[in-house]
Image (cartoon, rainbow, N blue to C red; front, side):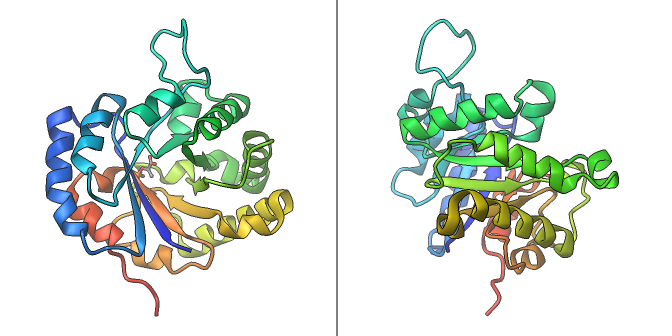
Amino acid sequence: MKYCMAANWKMNKTVPETVEFIKAFLPMVKDITDVEIVISPPFTSLYAASESLKGSDVKLSAQDVFWEEKGAFTGEVSPGMLLDAGCRYVIIGHSERRQYFHDDDTVVNKKIKAAHKAGLGVIFCCGESLEERESGRTFDVIGREIQTGLEGVSAEDLIIAYEPIWAIGTGKTATKEQAQEVHAFIRKTLKTAYGSAADAIRILYGGSVTPENVDGLMACQDVNGALVGGASLKPESFYKIVSFKKES
Ligand code: PEP
């Protein structure tokens, strides 16, 4: 299975900054063929990014989507519009969307179905808060997010990102053991839902991934890549992450 390294830029970078990043980044990664590299700029930079990425294998993702195709939904963007702007993927269910924008499991499910229907690949995020972890509810929370979020969703073109909320943007990374434990649980849950098709679903780890900790995390059996926030904003730093050392 090909590792996937996805950058989530959140609400960062103007159009010129996006283009400048890509100009510096593409020569660095031109020989990397065994890792799928994805960048997710804000909506306003998507089209410029897709133009700048032409001729490269780096894929483009949006950070969110609405489930309707078109109409009176001020401020929203449809799956078809993302495809039109050059996106291959869309991130759905990020904890910041769940926390600040009321993207609950049902909303997340509708968005995933609409994205798939339009032909977009989905990076589906799940993860527990510190309070949920400390009260022993990690597996309950993630089990629920997967069960409701992925209800009726195809296993094809689906990537899962496990992002413990307490590790996002905090500098606190899950240990290899913590990450592997939850990834193994997610794999088992997916197997129950999808049978053998679950084996092909990549499960990314996200939460304060850096060039320093990426090798250890990627060595875990059920970790198939990373979703990277802060450390993906500089080309050098994201390059170091996508060129992590694989175990021989
Ligand atoms: C994220 O928001 O998806 C993320 C993983 O952020 P960071 O790497 O900054 O913790």
